[in-house]
Structures are given as C-alpha cells and as structure tokens.
Length: 140
Image (cartoon, rainbow, N blue to C red; front, side):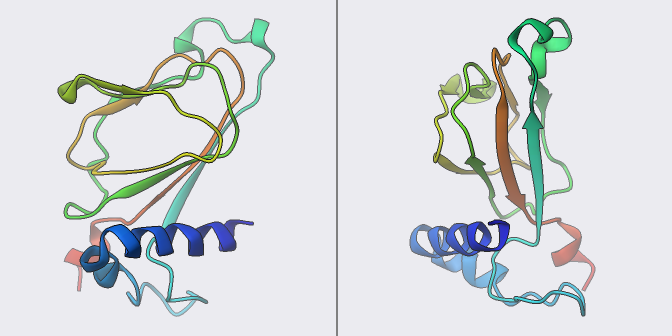
C-alpha cells in the first residue's frame, strides 16, 4: 500500500508542480533506494487509535504548532488522510486558515516555512506525511 501511495503522491506532485517534482525524482539518496521514480524519500505514519473516552488532556492527539525545520526549504510535504476522523483539522495560524480533513484528502504545503498544527482529535486520527529532508539537497 505504501509503495503505491508513494507513486500516486509523486504523480500528483508532477501534475501540479512539475519543476519541483523534477528536482525530487531521481535523487540518489542511498544505494538501498529501490525505486528512484518516487518524489518523496521519507514519510511519517501518524496513527492515533484510542477510544473516545481515553482522549483527554495533552491536547487529545493534536500536534502542537511547529515548523518542520529539517524539511527541504524549496519543497512541499504531502499530507494524505487515511481515515475520516473528528477534529484534527490542519491549521495554519499565520494564514488564519483551518482545513477540515476527510479520508482521501491530499494536501501539499511548505512545512519548512509555514507554522502549522492539528487541532484536538475526538476520534482516531490516521494520516501519512511524505517529505524530503533538506540534507538531501545541501550535503551533495
């Protein structure tokens, strides 16, 4: 499933951001990369499986406001929502923008430039974030 999702995300990036996808695809990351045609070379799998009554305190599965300082500066990350959940909206405080997320949503954004966070989650929150580390482009 992850390999197929990587290919789909890479394809979407190439459709809408061709010049950026061109920089990403074909990067020689290591001798162990099996498929150099994918645009993103790292991912984070975010699984929050709790019963509703267990989600209390500690911002209830939310992610605090942050900037992904180690992500590629000129590129995007790609958030893929794997399951519909209640809460967990994607918030960009500097833009005064809050995005309600649904299963199947794909969001590209500059994670290294824009402060972002997820609001509190009422139920399960499952998503994947594809990204590239800045060191792939600076340590050459």
